[in-house]
Image (cartoon, rainbow, N blue to C red; front, side, top):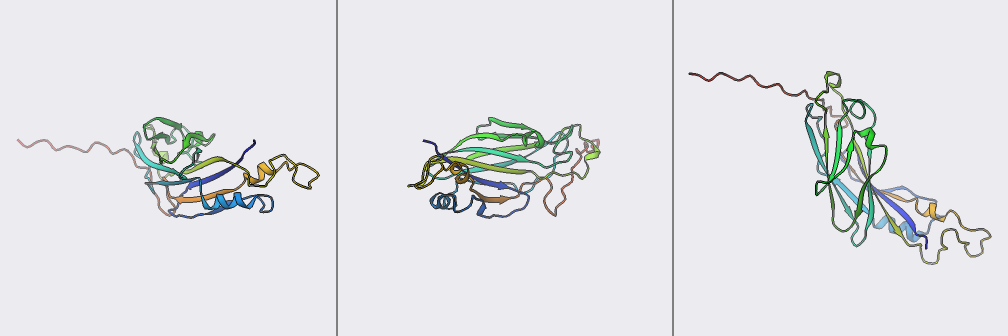
Length: 229
């Protein structure tokens, strides 16, 4: 039997805040009330990060951040990570920040610039009762020059979990004719799967709103004082 799909998203954005609410949904008359109520009361995934703001590292050095995804108790969901680093020399180009994402065991899940990782969702596997810990790094190439002075990057990370759910009791299967209907209800699958939840807004930025974090040059070796004889 065809099963309906729904998605919930935890968005990690440039300002430190926390919000829960409905982002988008199909017309109420078209989607079974039971499905929408379940989506609003029991989110599939919640997300957090231990780092609010990161300063751009020295050339040849890296900074790290952690992400934790927590699934709904007693359920499993397919989890993906969406990356959006905007535009600019730190997002794309020869001296762009090199990003990595690894799981708790150290297995590399994704590597590339923000622009490269934005091209396709990063598959994170199945999220179950156990929290999924992700570790990320941002490395500035050693060849980065003075042209990047003052540049910054706001990195937006979105955790999206999807799960098959059965149709509401008494509702016709997608593509089947509703009682008294002359034509099949061909839009049921797309409409009912259109609801999503905004679960969390958490800061993760290389330049935060109102806070200028400039790129720092690699510190030159400090002069040493000859030992006194």
